[in-house]
Length: 349
Image (cartoon, rainbow, N blue to C red; front, side):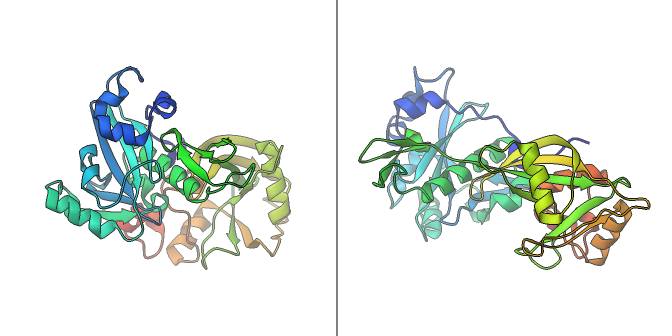
């Protein structure tokens, strides 16, 4: 069964040459003509979409899912706040030739945005506009919208945390159409950062899956063993180390399954499966570290399903890579089994 990774979908044209040869201000001033001679193919239109000060994206209903709310770039002149390099990023071009720019709204400007657009006549869909974390609803987006909002989330979280030069400590300014920052003192350029982390579905000889509860999670929530890679460490070695540290098990047959960004704020999740000896007459010796992991046990498919029905376990929602790995082991969807979870809730869990 192939992994379903909602935040690894879509294939936008990044138009990287624009980052070196233009600015957000120039693109907004010149419109599609700004791209002539700088990118292959045509840009037919430029549209803006919005993230609020918490990183949530403005979305509207679309069939059974959600769609990015966007407006023509000409609307930029209507807003009471400036749109320039400080709060925007050129995200990319979709297959139909539309270039999208993500706008980070100043704190408290959501209502003003809706009022301004309503008064200007650019109000299509605005009555249904709501703000959502991509972390929760990424699986409800189209491929293009998933790619756009994932990139925008990653960039704007990074920008919010990057105010000073790592080399000399001076203030930095946004450059590269939102994809870099440059030091105002020494001109050092910094690029967006992703921190690789591994996550692993571990099974024993009876094909039971290890599920664990982290001390920082809400009561009843169980998922897979995961952790950040250390400097100079190969992913497979990171899997073995994390499993040994957190639950005292030695794994083998570590196999890569897939990856997706998790820009909350800047992780890249690498998914694996692994095997541990035990089951039948020899139970694996699971030893939670008592600090990060407070409880862990192996579950058969029937036990897992019953725990979901009984409410003893709350499992990973559909945007997370853990959900795809668990579904791969389970053999199909499982959220509909979760106690008190209606079908609509399961889609947005």
